[in-house]
Image (cartoon, rainbow, N blue to C red; front, side, top):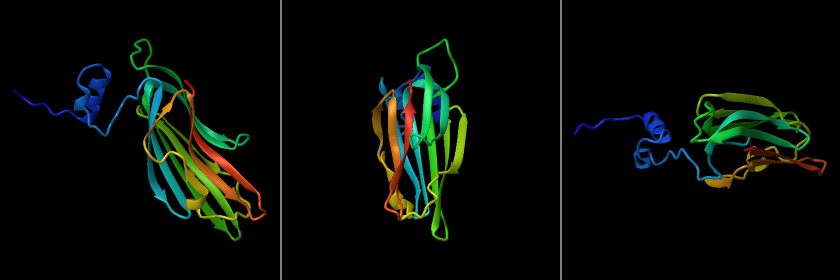
Length: 193
């Protein structure tokens, strides 16, 4: 009997198309979440006093075709949204992906007594679609705490299953000013449908 070596990409294609056996796929790669859930796998890439970098892999039970990424100043949220879904078994639509990556990098830069907090984020999918966003977090006041390891509080630090649709908090930035006022910005994933 001849053995054929297949790459993980080929195995993934066979699994999604209904051919093959789930045991043939690398056990660290789970490509489908249970019905009604998303699986979130966090990865802390860097955590220093001046930079915090996290990446979350999101695996769903459906394909998503629409992605948005940006800051909502009114709600004090940095939010990535995935929407316009269709079932993995759907045969009347194409495009999209059931695997999404959310990559977030936050930096603190001191200018004398002032600190500028900025971020850049990339929302991408398994099909190669990318949305990038960057800018200031509007926390350019005299911050009481400037060590990002104390400002950034990760809310998803281990692999979890979360109900979908729904808004899933991933990280919170808690700022304390020298004037005694506190503020926060929530970083979240919104699975619309």
